[in-house]
Amino acid sequence: MTNDNQSTDVTDGFHLVIDALKHNDIDTIFGLVGIPITDLARLAQAEGMRFIGFRHEQNAGNAAAIAGYMTQKPGICLTVSAPGFLNGLTALANATTNCFPMILISGSSEREIVDLQQGDYEEMDQLNIAKPFAKASYRINHAADIGIGVARAIRAAVSGRPGGVYLDLPAKLLSQTMDSAAGKKSLVRVVDAVPRQLPAPESVARALDLLKSAKRPLIILGKGAAYAQADADIRAFVEHSGIPYLPMSMAKGLLPDTHAQSASAARSYVLAEADVVMLVGARLNWLLAHGKGKTWGAPKRFIQIDISPTEIDSNVAIEAPVIGDIGSCIAALLNGLKSSPLKPDAEWVAAIQSRKDKNSAKMAQLLDSKPSPMNFHSALRAIRDVLKTRPDINVVNEGANTLDFARSIIDMQQPRKRFDSGTWGIMGIGMGYAVGAAVTSGLPVVAIEGDSAFGFSGMELETICRYRLPVTTIIFNNNGVYRGTDVNPSGGADVAPTVFVKGARYDKMIEAFGGIGYHATTASDLSSALREAIAAGKPALINAVIDESAGTESGRLTNLNPATAAHKK
Ligand code: ADP
Ligand code: TPW
Image 1: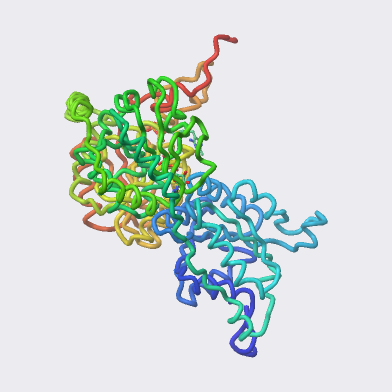
Image 2 (image 1 turned 30 degrees about the vertical axis):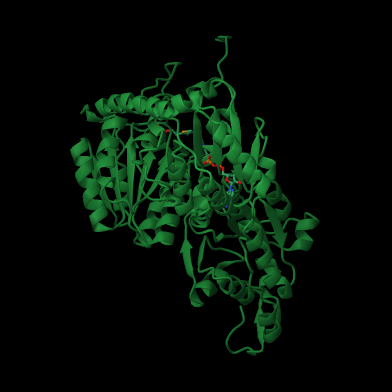
């Protein structure tokens, strides 16, 4: 790093990287230090940026990704070379898969040695390894290119369909010097990083025509719609049209889940019975049964709003694609709606309502039961009742049963407050997302975690305590992956593949770092612990003891486990 006693006319790679990020209003870096980027992290802090240090790069990457999703600005993750880079790469791939903008910046070793495979410290051809997992990958070799390289990475991450970008910074680049004035001039401020992309008027007209021809229309809101921050227009469109809607899990709260037009409590019914379906920032992937088959009943006619033209016809034919940014598309559709309004079919609306009433009554019974030990429903009921009073709280959620049940039981009232396993159904996002959400929003986070899910990122409890973040982690402790009841079929001494230590006290883990631990065996314990933890605004962990036989293998995805007719011994 350039010392103050060196000529002030000279700058270096370290300074230019920080200057370039700050020049684009990036104020936070999530990362983990080591050769060659320790001084870069120090400098970031010295220059007024926030550096949030993690215990594993995957969690830093997940924090960056969720910050990107919340703000439409790329979240930054900084790692060391080879192993640090690879640890961060899972998060980068997950961000790209989920369409979250982030930039993974990794230091790298000597190019000459790496390229000849001569065995450098942490040798790895990181740029090429990153390519299939990123929306774009770049390396900067000259200090004079740092401004343009950082600008290019930012634009790639946030424009069009957002995604993960890899930026490779060789150690030599960081110590390269150049004239300070020329360095300053080389910085680039990205203009209109997220440009509006207006839909073609004929595509809007085609979509409205199809919608008007519908008898049983349905709107599906995905996390792309939440990401777009077009909340008011989306709500206006839904309300003006009177069409029932389903939020995908991370679009919950875009309209409050208590909204009269929400068809969530009649999900299976509306998917099977709708005739025209309008997708808004939601892909027809496995989470929507690929738009066909039993879930969908008779074939549907689809309208799809998306920024990515190649998303259209990915699984089934889309009759009315509307390509553009969701804000512009919805504004255009809303405009069209005003000149020729739609009227919801009363029979369709009534049929949905009667399904909702029936299913809600069934759910109420489950939620009202008070089993001992707790099951998923009774524990989630306690959490639901507390969270209802705090719509500002961010909710992180992962696990199998814990995810499936929480998704339907915990209502969200505000947009971009629910962060979960997402497009891959990945475990391990929990503590990274929790830190990212707390740091980005300055508001409390409640992380609802299966005991297995939590284990993937559990060491970040120390990070949460170190930065004194208002994160309450609730562990649904049923002694194993999915459940804790399996037995070793061989009768051997090892426990079954899904089983953990029985009766583990996760609450003791957070106490090691000065956080508050709670051990909750009843719904009322859980409720009072959660209230107290949120009010304290300090790091806390509630070990919620759940019946180890509750839940099912893989939650609602049991059918995805390969089955075979052959029974080998
Ligand atoms: P979900 O999992 O909630 O169904 P997906 O991640 O599958 O949502 O889909 C999100 C979609 O939203 C992606 O196809 C992506 O291209 C699209 N998208 C993201 N941001 C925007 C935006 N600003 N405007 C339009 N489409 C967007
Ligand atoms: C990176 C496979 C899916 S769900 C799950 C695993 C290991 C954990 C389920 O147990 P948990 O939840 O968290 O205790 P619950 O509510 O059923 O008791 N590795 C990765 N991602 C995934 N999805 C898996 C493994 C998996």
